Image (cartoon, rainbow, N blue to C red; front, side, top):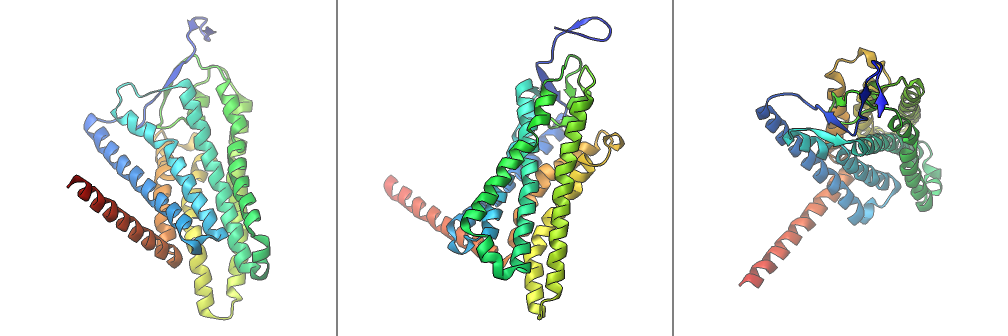
Length: 328
């Protein structure tokens, strides 16, 4: 039992209510349909990239290995929030358990941190390939690439562990209503019965550090890449280098533009709708666009995807004909 400021006893919070997008039942069904389509397209697009990288021997290079891991990360990124959001559209209670809320918080922020590390690693890979082409093969060897991938995953999942533990240990004995469609650190901190300046400072500092430091690293990497590209002798070489890096830069701008508004700018300036829109954008929209950006701007990836689709279509026809023969 906990004691509130008025002196009355209150039960500790055992679950939270995610308000999501309050609207009529008809609009809830429409949103459920739209979100489901985006979710399925995201899974299919990123899944196709993973299959193309795994099955095409020409894509077994550090750049595409990082891209395959990035696509795998995007699948789990949307899985950390979207399925529960879809359930809430159809639910009357819109409740999530205390444990489930903090598990979602941990995985959502861990996936976001891992994405920052992977975008930095991909920028470093492009820097080496364009600015240090003679040393690229000796630096980005198979074991080094494997260690880089593992480091991104491990660092991403360790980065936000302490803030999640600190927030989960705070007393929650009042309102359990979160005006969001995901369990975010900001709304949870405001629901605590007791002030927690250390938890708030730790959460804000670690979020800002991973975003700003990784973004600064990417900017420096691409500034050096641009200088190297301008020194290339032919226009065709410059165009090839720009096209290789253009897709990555587009993803960086999409992702960092929204998370900086949410987690670096002061939270007091946000309206109640702004956090939902920003979170919706970097949690659902960017994972949907990433496979499109990479496949449309990269000829090797487009050829590998077409090859994968042809193999997939042939497999469906083969198994379909076998099923028909067995029925006969």
